[in-house]
Image 1 (tube, protein in one colour):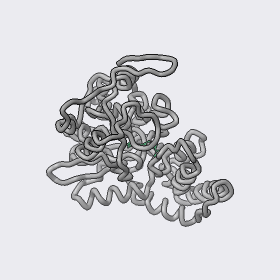
Image 2 (cartoon, protein in one colour; image 1 turned 30 degrees about the vertical axis):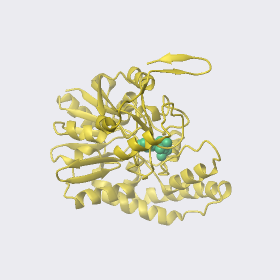
Image 3 (cartoon, helix red, strand yellow; image 1 turned 120 degrees about the horizontal axis):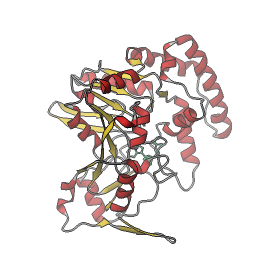
Image 4 (cartoon, rainbow, N blue to C red; image 1 turned 45 degrees about the horizontal axis):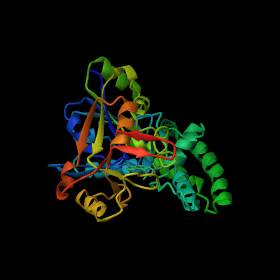
Length: 355
Ligand code: IMP
């Protein structure tokens, strides 16, 4: 049975977790494809409220295997905390597997994220400050640490020491930050890796074996299409590709094996952080939607920017990602309004387009 991709159609927070949770009930495997602890899903079931940042929502089902794919960047300590919280809520997390190819978010990535954001006078990206951009930058620069490398403690310690010493130069001389202690960083990472070790493996064979056996496989993207590094509102984007193509790449799913691309859209729009937002509502209607939709970030608690649904950008996303189905969420949030608007066209100095 070919794969189904679930992706955000807007700027994230469209309710993908709820849909994944619903579809995961009959899946064999759920694979998370991109992003890191910048993402946050809240899933409510009769067993309680579960907040997840890195672990696929499928973990709530005892028969579903979950994979954190190669395209994800992982803060090992944050993942251990998340797993412990889930275990404390009675969830069996032993079915989680982590691609050895996934990259590690090191403490200096978060330091650099903070330092770079605070240097920007104008045009702040408004990142989640989780070190995501610097971690993907190091990966692209072939200077990253893959989680599989943590298995060999002696070699990993020496590698971490070198990396921290290098980044300390940058942190202290360019940003005026305090240096990090390489041994403390290594101790923390290796302790977390010890807990995660049973889950770290080559996940790609698990994916193609499931596909070959005709089993239902869901790929869960974090964030949303308008935050895509290539096709989003650059530079106000995240540093990965939360698109259908990015889902294949990050999860290790061959593009020819994808049957469905489900894009989740809210009946209105939200975005967190800086960047263009043509339909933004800065008035009491925006506040009403924010309050009724509980539009405050799962990861950072920041109030989300709110606006009307944008057909122009939705069409761009649908075309670019070969979307086969749409899930429209939070329609009831708009119940309190006598009328609503949607953007059906846009004008710039040089062009006009319609949705
Ligand atoms: P970063 O991914 O932390 O580097 O943040 C880059 C941009 O993506 C910022 O505007 C963030 O607010 C946004 N962002 C990252 N993750 C999420 C998410 O899960 N939901 C909504 N916005 C996100």
